[in-house]
Length: 188
Image 1: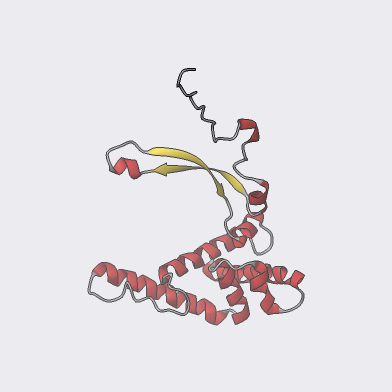
Image 2: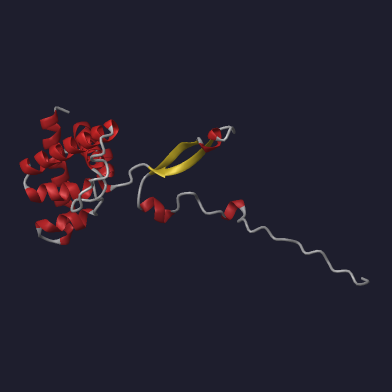
């Protein structure tokens, strides 16, 4: 071997197929229910290219309230699902600034689009205030904390007292109760 070096052989950094980690591992599976979904990438279409589709695994029920609605049972049937979706739409229309901060972004300016946005925001805030007035505060707060702010059932239910093992059951009963009232009032 006169002055020559041996060529280096690169090792693949990919795991062999038999040792590859599954898409949804045991830890992830404990924290949700996963299923295949198709995502369409429209970004390439705007640049004159073709759209692409991807198969992905996604969490079917990203919040505990969504999981309870999927499981069904008293207070978690189709009318209550519609009530939760209705409230989430109202909160989205009311603005994402939070409960303690006013959101004046869409108000004023004389633009008819802004006027329409502020009117729908005002209507959403009025409807939410009506629900809040008619439902006992402790139940409304638990419902809002879970359906809007995605609190854990233990954290939301601890306002009822009792033992830690009871907090989740209290929170679930409160969410089902409030959703049932709204479903009844809305005729869902």
